[in-house]
Amino acid sequence: MKVVYTNEALALSLSNIQGDLGFVPTMGALHDGHISLIEKSRSENKFTICSIFVNQKQFNNAEDFEKYPKTIDTDLAKLELAKCDMVFVPTNEQIYPANFKAPYYELGNIENVLEGYYRPGHFQGVCIVVNRLLDLIKPNKLYLGRKDFQQCIVIQKMLALQKLEATIELCIVRTKRDQFGLALSSRNLRLSEAAKRKSLILINSLQHAKDALNRDENTDLTKIQNDSINEIKKAGFESVDYFDFINEDFEVIKDNNESKRIIAILTAATIDAVRLIDNIEI
Ligand code: PAF
Image (tube, rainbow, N blue to C red):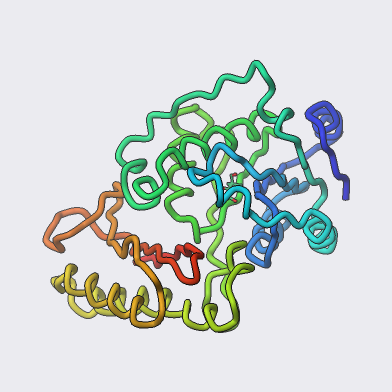
């Protein structure tokens, strides 16, 4: 496995590659969810490259950025074991040189709801870094995990805005969960074992809500939402930012009689000062 640290070394190594190139962007603190993206890319491409870069631009909370786990040695060992071909570990100066001008992306409503609402500026930061990495790497396929469902839809929109849709295929890989069902996340490293067990309420509530919708498509969404938030709090969460139903235009649906189909239920909640997100497809 080749590890490159500069844009020049990256360009040189990429110039020797023939065949499809799959790209997995990460911020490190790798877990089996990331490794499942590497595996998926390896199964679909001749060559797989992973990036590790903690992108300050997407953190709306400075403390969250400072606290973000940095585990580069174990990350590289995991990628080696997963037979990743190349890892790009740039410095901030490589990604954002002095003359770099951050673009603004017209993301529309998706930037104002759910994660967009609770983390102002977050999705602009994500688009800036992913767009920059795509410019440097020029992959055929981009792999993202479905746990960050809103991020996947935002990146799809960014690809369309940048006219990259025809050259880069976005591949959304299903959420990897632990043996009990908790969605894997780098933030789980900050959870006690007790908090991890309590956190299962997230996927359980999402599943109950989905079952209720499937049983009766005219079911009262506000009641499901309120019941779910109460259950999550009762399980030990300090707060629930949202538990919402969204349609294919990524609008939050309050009334089940609206014409557009519900495609997913998304939630974000905080336990032991760790904010977790999860979602379920309908
Ligand atoms: O999902 C993440 O880890 C990050 O948002 C990403 C896509 C690597 C961009 O920094």
